[in-house]
Image (cartoon, rainbow, N blue to C red):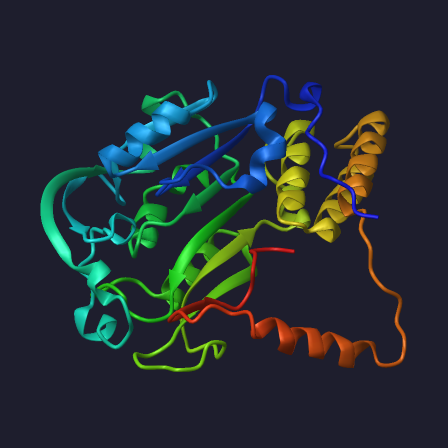
Amino acid sequence: MFMSKPAIPKNLLKDNPITILDLGAAGGIHKRWNSYKTVIRSILFEANKEECMKLISNKQESTIVINSVLADKCKMVNFNICEKQQVSSTYVPNVSLLKMYEESERFKINKTIRMEANSINNLLPDNGIKEVDFIKIDTQGSELDILKGATNYFENLIGLEVEIEFVELYLDQPLFPEVHSFIESKGFSLIDLRKYYWKRKNNRSSYNKGNLIFADALYLKSPESLIKMIGVNQEKIIKSIYIYLAYGYFDLARSLLLLSTKNNLLSDKLSHQMEKIIDTYEGGFLLPNFKGKERIKDFFYFFGNKFSSKVFYSGSDSKLGN
């Protein structure tokens, strides 16, 4: 029997909500956070004014929307507005590579605007934000620049979701090895990749993966790192458990709960309450092992691929996390 995810009891994080930064926030915060609405404060950054107005018109009381181009520091940048707004960037599209794939015209630069960019380190204090729990970045090549301008918030940060590229979609952009090395150096572990593949032009196959182009990467601090965090308290432990649960990592949630209880970071009452919550999230159904189970699984995987759309792009995974 499958069990729905419960909302967080309001009393647990009543005065100290989970603070999430969404950088490149067109479309709003991901639905994985829906069950956390009562205890989330979201700060949405979006460079496009029209998209900002949409976010403002739909925002909750606890949401802050900021119209700004982000960088490692305060400076002037060229912002390239492309045919498809979602691929606009401070980096210039790599036309010679993009032409190898379908729909490359969406990267065509319609106009370039000279704009002032600023850093997270500068902008958040201006909005009264002292601590951040989670950051999601999807800014078309400038992710590393932005991360370098957010280092004041890394000490108390629990995790990040970052789009990373394996090929140079934009000229001179930082690629996965450089971005990964920087994030790892700040004490985060790579937990999962949701990979995206593009097929070359004139490809007739509907379900081959094509070339690995980019991925959404999930980084989290380990339970062992979190309990050693300076000033760690019950609320930080609860936030961390819920962020683990949002991505389906019950093993990390349980490990953190056990370590926190062992180190007297949670009261017995709160420990039992969190254990019940993890049980509820983890509830699900799995067939027992039997002869031929793997062959049946392979058949459904093969059959499912027949439903793939005939498009040039594909994702190897339907979701990030479990």
